[in-house]
Length: 200
Image 1 (cartoon, rainbow, N blue to C red):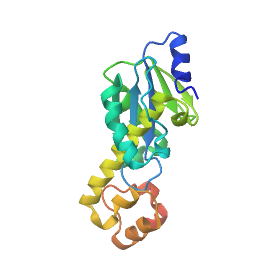
Image 2: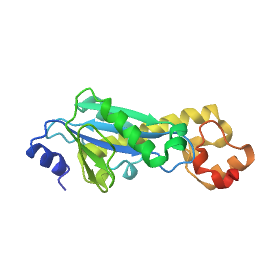
Image 3: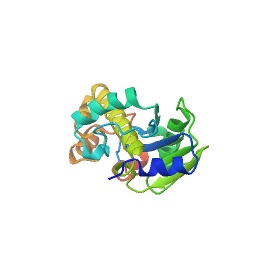
């Protein structure tokens, strides 16, 4: 498989700085949605990078350091649970992606975005369905977003131990629903995702 097929296609069209963009945490009941943007050096493949969902936690952690040390530029950003409730999850995801792209120290003129919907970016944007398993820069972004969000949820597990965030990272597992029924919601729960549970 040619991991750089999409990046090279963009360079052949005359773009100078191509970033990959992906998110983690669209589905959970708690915590922010996290997005990352990564610009790899031209022709660069970081050994071992793959769709974050196909990698073990240990492998993702090791790759996280490799990516931030070896990529030409990277940026990670959030949209909070409050923003998710106010905007809806799609618009909040777009906001996190926009923040990530705008945070890059190298200004991209092209973004390859995982999925089939484009966030409103200042540069040209192209969507790639399953991009995290087709594009080297999107795969790198998927690893950064996933590891960053997981680390954040582990911090929240210390703050709110009764919910066991370390086990489910905020996703809607049976254990998580059980804890919500027992303890109610906390500050980092997405109210808009819990309307049935909250009876609203």
